[in-house]
Image (cartoon, rainbow, N blue to C red; front, side, top):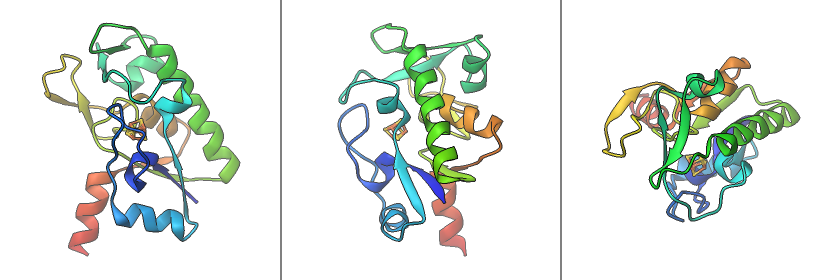
Length: 154
Ligand code: SF4
C-alpha cells in the first residue's frame, strides 16, 4: 500500500483551496493501491489557509527543534506541522504503507526541495516535515514530479 498526498488525487486540500490533480495518482486510489492524506489538514489547519514555509532549515531541522514553520503572516504553525507528520505516520502504520508519493516543494510533503522561508519562490534542497518524519521511519518518500518524469521515460 502507498500513501499519496491528497491534493494529487484532486482533493481541494491545498492552502488556497485548490488541488494538484493528476489522473495517475487518482487511479492508484481507485485501484486500491494508495490511500490519500493531507498532513496539514491532519495537523489541524484550516482550508483555505495562509501559506507556510520552513524558516531556518528543512523538515529534519524542524523535527530536531532547530527550525520552525511560519505562515506568510508570521504565525508559528510548527506544532500543527509536527502533529500532521505524527498523524501521517500513524496512518502509514495502520495501512502498512512502505512508500509515500508526496507533492513536490511543499513544507509538509516536499521530499527533494522546499521553499527557503522567505516567501520569494526560492527553492533549497531539503524535505518537508512529514516527508522527513516518514523517511526517518523507513518509509520510502517519492517526489511526485520525479515520479511522473520517470513514468514518462519508461
Ligand atoms: S500538505 Fe501535502 S497533501 Fe496537503 S495540500 Fe499540502 S502538499 Fe497536498
